Amino acid sequence: MIIIIKLKHYKNYRQLFNLINNTVNMKKGLFLSFLLVLASSIMLPGQANSQEEKVETCEGLIQAPFISNGQPFRAFLTGDEVAEFHTTFLNGSMYRVVACSGKNEPIIFSIYDTNRNLLFSNDEHNKSNVWDFKIDGSVECIIEARLDKKITTSGMALLYIGFKNLEGN
Image (cartoon, rainbow, N blue to C red; front, side, top):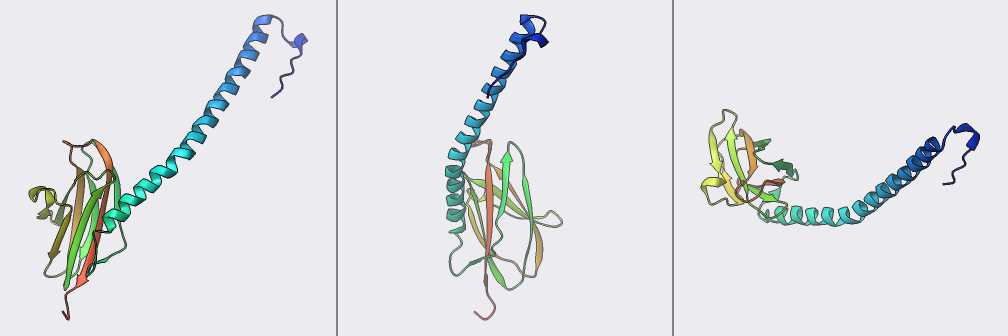
């Protein structure tokens, strides 16, 4: 950038100094912004790949004879936040619910019916990240997921649901 200054427009050197100083500060700001964008573009792909590896690992816990429903539930949680997911479990199927975090830390999940009757909580089962179950009849459910505050204060909660048909078996 070239700075051309017409001296006759500035009545004193103070105005001229302020103009030059502001221009230099603007250049520093642009340079720092460029460095920040460059650094984030270099660092983020590695983090995204790492996050995708966690997703694949979590989804890998749904193995044959279970089939993933193909709809992962994800939420970024901090502190006491609770993620709420809605799903329907159908009669005649066996289900597997898998809960993982982006940092391989336990996710506490609870499953309720629509009247908020607790059907299952992994907090009562050593924070197991997998639960297999069969429900008689079709049931709309609410799945709540939260972090274990004793271990972490923020992170990604991932939930997957798999099923296998029991009819005809």
